[in-house]
Amino acid sequence: MSANSSAKAVETVEIGGVAHGGFCVGRLASGKVAMIRGALPGERVRVEITSERSKVAYGRVVEVIEASADRVPEIWPEGAARDIGGVELGHVSYPAQLRWKREVLAEALRRNGSAELEAMVSAVIPDWEVESLGDKPGRTRVSFIIDDQGRPAMSEAGSHQVHAIKSFPLTVPGIDELRLFERPLGFAPGTRVKAVAPSASAPVLAVGGEVYNADLIPTTPRVREVVEDAKFRIFASSFWQTDYRAPATLSAALLAGIGEVHGFETLELYSGSGLFSVFLGRALGKEGRLTTVEGSGPAVKSAAYNLEHAGFGGVKTLRGNVDARLLNSLEFGERVSAGTLVVADPPRTGLGEKTAKAICEKEPFRIALLSCDPVSAARDLEAIRKEGYVLKTFRAFDLFPYTFHMEALAVLEKN
Ligand SMILES: C[S@@+](CC[C@H](N)C(=O)[O-])C[C@H]1O[C@@H](n2cnc3c(N)ncnc32)[C@H](O)[C@@H]1O
Image (cartoon, rainbow, N blue to C red; front, side, top):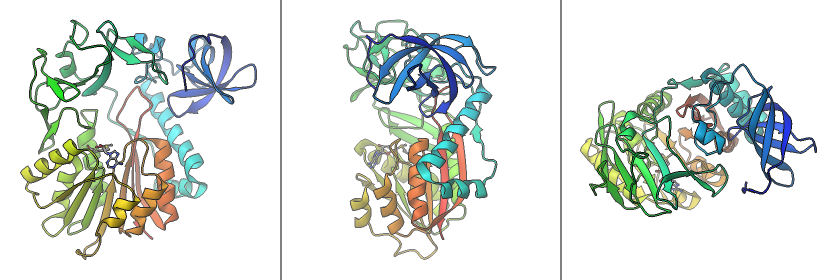
């Protein structure tokens, strides 16, 4: 969607259902479908059209005429007023957010997967819900850009337009120690800044390759995280699960989902700084064999360090782009007789059909797929299902309250 600041038409719209991306669907007087932010199903609202494509318009609510019972006072008014991404469900009661996410994921399984995939999920977990850890603010990472007056700013959804912000909700108290909004930070306009509040070291600002402490003095680029009894040292600029509850929740869910894997040969794809690798190392035991693959060099370095310090120095930590070519080049399934497992935790774009197929061609006994986007989850699961795998476990998690984001874990086995 491209922003069109000159398009300021406003019209009254009856809101239908929810859609991916934090939108609700409505129809304009012209008959065109409109994807609307800030609305709730069943509402009657005044909508400002922000951009239009040939078949669909995008807009945001500027006035609520008939409100849903699920509407609550906006959690981040300054962000909502400008449709800044990152808090798309700030006007939705928490129970309704969970229903919203379930509906979006169920619809994705139907539309982007297939009737067979949907039936397979319903057969395994008939009444699956989006599991919640509560709506307490929990983000340990928040990124922003410095505007032309040196202030922290964020982008308008689907646009390059940035707006200075005076606050950001949903973060852990550690982020407050960085005093992001109380003083000039001194970074040049256009600089991307990531505020990080790790679980086991002081909060920092990661700016390109540099890292600064709360006094804005350069400091070590690495931070420390503790997940249950496991210790990690990672680069502040690297990916780490954003909510403070997410690393333990997802690791535990993964271990529960894969079940007994002692002695398995395992390929962990998109392994980041080794969060799951350490727990997998424990589950596989001495007889098992683990190979990890990750695209980011600093993350691979951290994974090797974290594995070594957890007593798993024998794990092969590969740097590479996960794709069919790389998968074809890997030796897998020949050395260990107990069983084979592939764990994949791709970015939002998912595996894609070719990579999903290439994983299946390695013929792992079990595949665990963690997805952070409902559409790519459905597409990837459908590709794996078509290769003869059946679903054993399916769980969805809300690890990003007040946003449209969700996480799904599926474990499949060769039929
Ligand atoms: C969702 S994160 C998961 C990381 C890890 N499982 C964790 O929980 O910390 C996805 C990871 O995939 C990596 N990545 C993205 N695209 C990739 C690709 N094509 N090949 C390999 N790694 C990739 C990113 O650098 C990131 O570390």
